[in-house]
Image 1 (cartoon, rainbow, N blue to C red):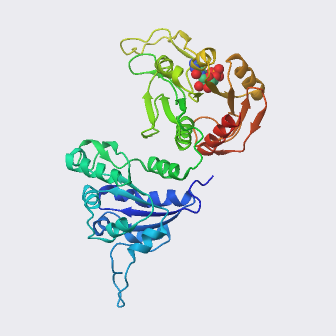
Image 2 (tube, helix red, strand yellow):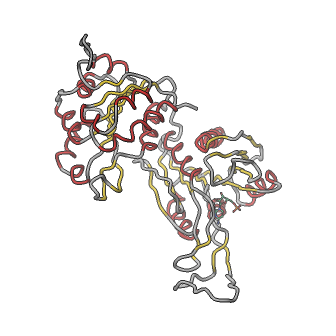
Image 3 (spheres, rainbow, N blue to C red):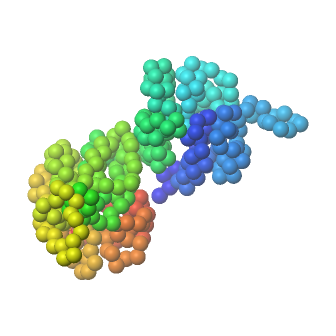
Length: 400
Ligand code: C5P
């Protein structure tokens, strides 16, 4: 359950604005079972205080070779820190620190720890887009990679400078996925491709209105993260959602309508090993979407609806060696309906969640699932986080 249980993570923080996110990162690492110590560059202290980090990590925070502010100077042993850690994560890593690391400079404690560390070193760069794109930075990153460091990609979006582009530190959740995958020894989905559908679909009524549902995309994204942890290549076809994910082994295809989702799925389905349909696809759409906004009038408005394509049924009908797993959100005769769905759609498994169960369903962060296999045997699980549900779903799929 706790992927980092008993692991010693040394977090190195450098002086970039993304440093303000690091107390949350420490919390998440601890939540996953890790023990965390923090080492900072002097300039990182301008962005986040050592007191905050010492409080959340429950360990002293070090930033200079000699312990500050006491009459008996003490040597902060960089070698011991490097030896203590199972993994050294430097996040955020500024262009200055990347450059110093690439050239072996050692003018602060963090760099001293880096040079003497024997453990794997992971680096999450964060800087403005032009600094990141600069050939020197790119060269430093290649250099660091050639020395065996793991340099993470950067995120894209709003930057502290007000500009938009590539340079943001990766989302904390994504950094965590990488760190967890480092410690996942058994990677049963290595070299496998997993197709996932996630989120709702929006079916246009006119240019400003749509038929949609409350699906958040959380279950599908949790499945994507779990598949990545298990070593898979993931194709995630998602309807509109605020969920975020970035990973070199993941292709995210953002779609809006059921038809878009079907087109995306049809393009990749042949090449996948396992497909899981977690999307809450609208079953009906307006026969015609109005070109102009429909004006309000005094009378009633009747919308004529037609079926959307059933993506899961398509995959069930066209599968060769692929395993196809669906979801069933039921409100009555749950087990029976889900089993019928599994048979009708020619599935290898179906995940049942009932709206009757408190905390289950598609909009929250928890779910209560029953996994039904092709032979109709089933396993029920208690109310769990969607991440834990995702783990159980893959365990069931892989147990077949
Ligand atoms: O038959 P029902 O729509 O209840 O089945 C739900 C399952 O089918 C879910 O896995 C959902 O992702 C999938 N589905 C689909 N395309 C649709 C409708 C549902 O892939 N048009």
